[in-house]
Image (cartoon, rainbow over all chains, first blue to last red; front, side, top):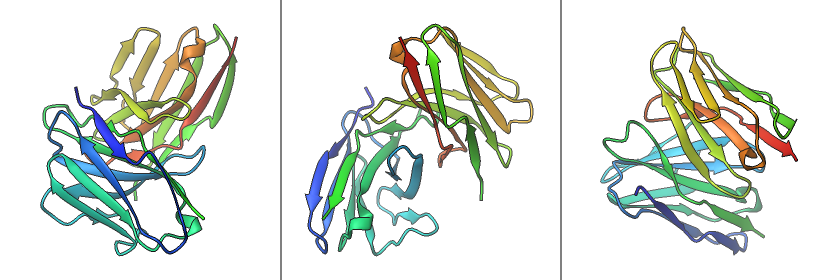
Length: 116
Length: 108
């Protein structure tokens, strides 16, 4: 149980285009979802916290107009990187919290974004 | 804001040797979690420590939470090649602040 999927796993796009990444909790309802960014051999940097039915809370320094987050249901959150640039190339990982699991976060497999 | 520091950054050990990674927070933590990320993979939850001075074991892994709830350690006894990966500590409640991670390489 507690499986989180992400789609796509890899995406290559041209500079200036927008990319949507989906994060789904497959067998549980996620009260909260988180979006992280990870650079090679670096730690996870929290970008935003997403709650179903409400606006996402962004961390300091993360542009909310650049990284649009929608949490339409208890099993789906999406991150859209708008007008992507090469510096947005990174590994984006989502995670999900569920009630009764004591703050344990379940991570998706990640999405590798490459902007040319 | 809260910062979580983790050392060492890298550790190469011979198979069978022990390994320890340390985590320190600038503030008192409500809890600390440990995750393992295999190369090319995503973080996987290992454990959560909540109580001051708590010690938990999972087979060859021993996790400790300091008395002041500001530091923690993960110790692996007799490492195996399957232990390779990056070990992250993460502090806080629902919103986690991750340490930089310790990359463990095991030479067979």
